[in-house]
Length: 133
Image 1 (cartoon, rainbow, N blue to C red):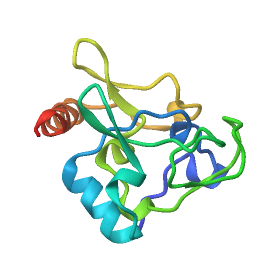
Image 2 (image 1 turned 135 degrees about the horizontal axis):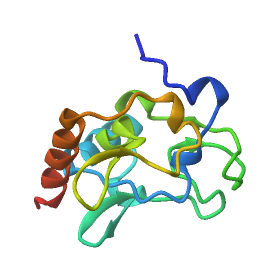
Image 3 (image 1 turned 120 degrees about the horizontal axis):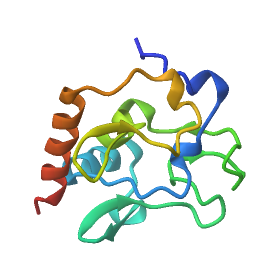
Image 4 (image 1 turned 30 degrees about the vertical axis):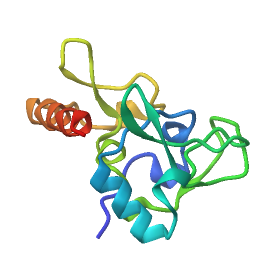
């Protein structure tokens, strides 16, 4: 059973637009297997880290099913069940002090529980894995 996020019932996809969502190599390979797409067709390298591409027209993640470039437009993730860990953790992000916080860019952040120290550790571990080649 999928845990219902506060944003899903509203069709919110703000976090999937103009994103620079990093991927581990294993996440990219898993997405490739599940979609049948070559890794090169849905990723690019950003500051040395594999990153999901945004569609040129919608400015949204290539896996977001939407026809609009409006930030508030609805959209559905076509790879939700196998989405990257960064997507799973969002709206929890690290601040410059490596503390877990709720991202100001999330319109529904007030409906999420406050992040814990465990969240910070999980994101720091993810960051470490992302930097490995």
